[in-house]
Image (cartoon, rainbow, N blue to C red; front, side, top):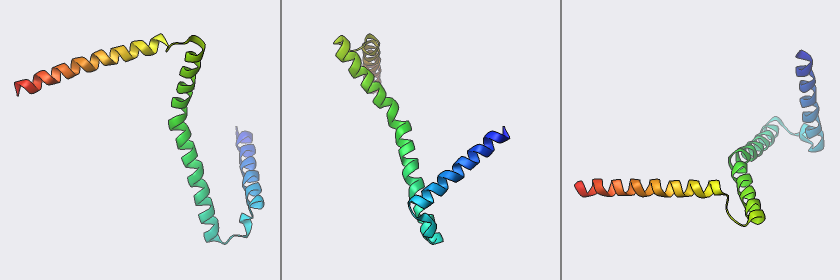
Length: 103
């Protein structure tokens, strides 16, 4: 286990070294390094958050399009879910309207 951690640590150190040499970060002052690494962290974290939040929906959208192009209709499971949601919403709306009439 420690050999994996050591090799991972060496890999991270190598990547940091490559980043500093490629973008000349090693000649920055400490404040400039802080700003550079802060912006880098911000960009990486925002990209990661956007990937986690939006990629599943995007993949589902692409799969639904592929299904439509291959079969010519929306998947039956999607239709059943939409019909179920519509009937439930209608029942809730009727119950709410009845409650408002009583008040």
